Amino acid sequence: MFCPQCGSTQSEDLKFCKVCGVNLYAVMQVVAAREPDEKFDWSKTWVQEMFLSADEKKRRKAEIEKQRGITPEIKRYNEIKAGIIVSSVGIAIAIFLFVFMGGLIASSQVSHDAAEILSRLWITGVIPLFVGLALITNGVVVSKKLVEAARRASQMGQEGLEGDANPPSLRPADTNEFLSTPFSVTEQTTKHLGRSAEK
Image 1 (tube, rainbow, N blue to C red):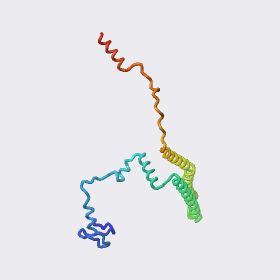
Image 2: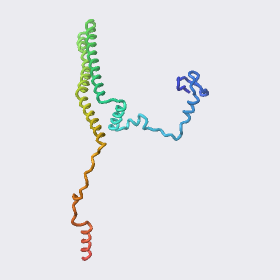
Image 3: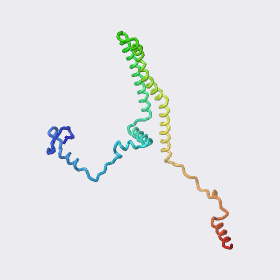
Image 4: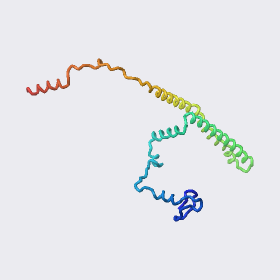
């Protein structure tokens, strides 16, 4: 048996851990006390997450973000911050590769063909630079609109809550709007029944 406190291996006969002194007898009782008719609940495992619909996943993600206090403004700020960081990393990679490859070429131990390739390798730093610029643009332009839409939705929700104190009432009933029918349904059917009996 392993001690749950310190992780050391202990004999099954011991009531207390030799290393940390935790009560192993109580641990064995808890493990053995599992009810036999207790069923395993798959909804509390990661397997259930696999079978959720896209809408349900989106709803749960929004609920978790709401509980954590992640607002659209915070998402926008984090997106702009991530864009700046990724752009800076791209610039740093480009500068490092330019200087490092220039040093390799200057050492004159590289063939002419390899020097041509190495001299242009710094361009790989442009990829994270453009990714970062795209994140910044998205945060400044697109996410700003999402923040405004979320703000409008929350304001409409607050106005709806305030308006619930005086809900709109129905207008008074107008009995004149019902049209009177010239005959009933049964009146016409009985006339037809009388004619068929005469034949």
